Amino acid sequence: MSNIRTREFAVGIVFLLVGFGYLYMTSQLPRKEFIDAAFVPYVLAITMCLLGGFQLWDASKIGADAPAKAEDKADYRTVVKTLGLIIAYAALLEPLGFPVITAIYLFAQFIVLTPNDHQVSLPKYALIAVLTSAIVYATFRYAFDMLLPVGVLSAFLN
Image (cartoon, rainbow, N blue to C red; front, side, top):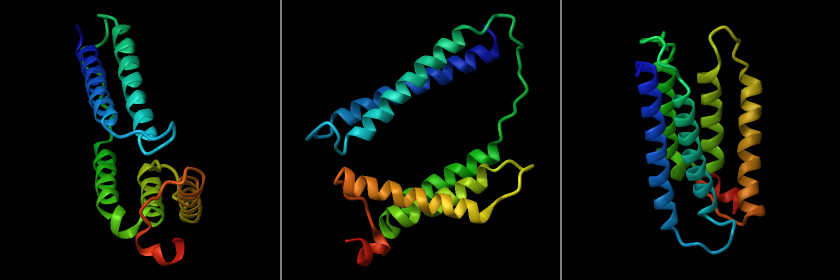
């Protein structure tokens, strides 16, 4: 079995294990109706399980003649920056609130994910981040009647 095939199988197994673990933890949440606080975690868990299954299926198609070592094109700096942004997002969600930290996170993530050969468009990124944050907040607050942390905007949004 080639190195690539082994690595692809390992990724699929990890995705499946994490997906099933997340699905088990989600099943422990109390359910009230079809769309409630557990709905999105169920969707995420099922999606992770499906991705793990697809990864394993794809890895099984890799032939024995695959090169032993593929050129590693992973951009680890981007991965580290993204993980840092996710950690900051989780840490600041409660004090800053969903609308503010989501807009900041999206704006920063757009910059991180912009390829080096493309120009960063700060006004466009800011507009997309603010609109997306506002639409998601309004959807959860008013369509699903689910409260999200408002943080510093509590005087304006309650």
